[in-house]
Image (cartoon, rainbow, N blue to C red):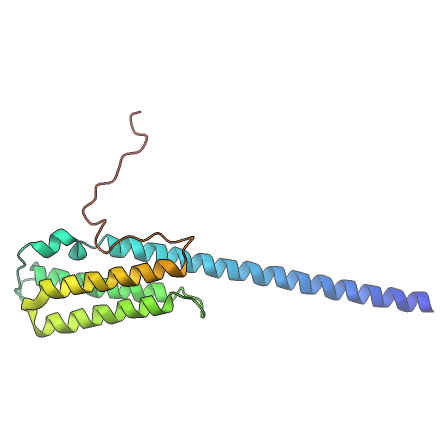
Length: 173
């Protein structure tokens, strides 16, 4: 009788332990997948912000056309770019985990875009100064964002990739 009871206890402990181990492994895989999705979304966002022509330093030096009625004016083009960038930031926020260190910088990016849009809408002639302020603010937030994932994210300044030519690798060698 004692042998049967001991076998039942050992079997129960083994089955329970195995189930708990499987549950912990599955939970670990889920967390790893969530972290990977977050890091990938943030990498894409960094590249997107770095690729924005409106934020490139050379864009800030050129005289800008401010005709609101012209869909091809610099004012319209820059405003559209900032609105789309704000949308990209909001999309990236959907990939964040609840306790992610990226919440604060991404929320700051949305706020910076909102402030730019409001200020330029109110005073279109301030677009060059507002673009410079936006670029500086985004750079600081990008650094903060990269600090949240120091081993996975690489800092790229806002607008820094907008006019960079791709480097050919291994073609014709």
